[in-house]
Amino acid sequence: MAVGIVQTVRPGALAAFECNLNVDMNRFDRFVLALKEALGPSSGLTSDDVDVEFLTKLMKDYKSDEREWAKFAMGDASKGYTRNLVDEGNGKSNLLVLVWSPGKGSPIHDHGNAHCLMKILRGDLTETRYAFPEAGEEEKPMKVISEKVYKENQVAYMADELGVHRVWNRGSDFAVSLHLYTPPNVAKGGCHIFNEKTGKKSHIKNCGYYSAYGKKL
Image (cartoon, rainbow, N blue to C red; front, top):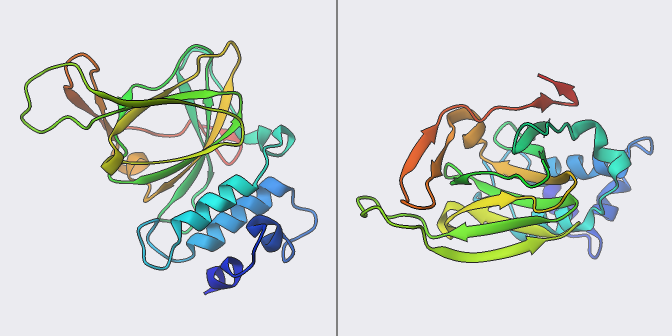
């Protein structure tokens, strides 16, 4: 499959892929196609024919340029963040631009048994990870595993095996991040959010999109 050809090119995975693409496309467009090519017809990041490290390298290779992705970055100051669909890849993944309002963020949440790669496109974001509450465990404050600030162009990986987390924007301006989810379980079936003080979880059925392909829904 084509991914094998792409993966043999070192260094500069994204630059190598660009050589075969339309010269009228910007680097973000080419980056999106490179991710789609890497995933191919597979079922997601856990498939045997997909290299998570290679997808991470593609994410790192793209250097953020706001002029290239701005049309996808629709924010709303009344919300903690917005989910803006960029691409649905092979039909078993999705790529989103999330716009984070100043001083706001997400609740503590799981990923619906999906895997996520996150790249910061603008600003800084703080991620706090918590231990996954055990089923039947008595109510008590959730245990913080780690807290880290990610800056522009940095990439992070998250999955339920690593716990649950919240992401928030401590800054005074909007921050923007890019997320590759596979499979797109949260968009289809929702996710769980958690009470930090008790560990109690609630199911959120609708984790839809604020916009899709540059158009507000």
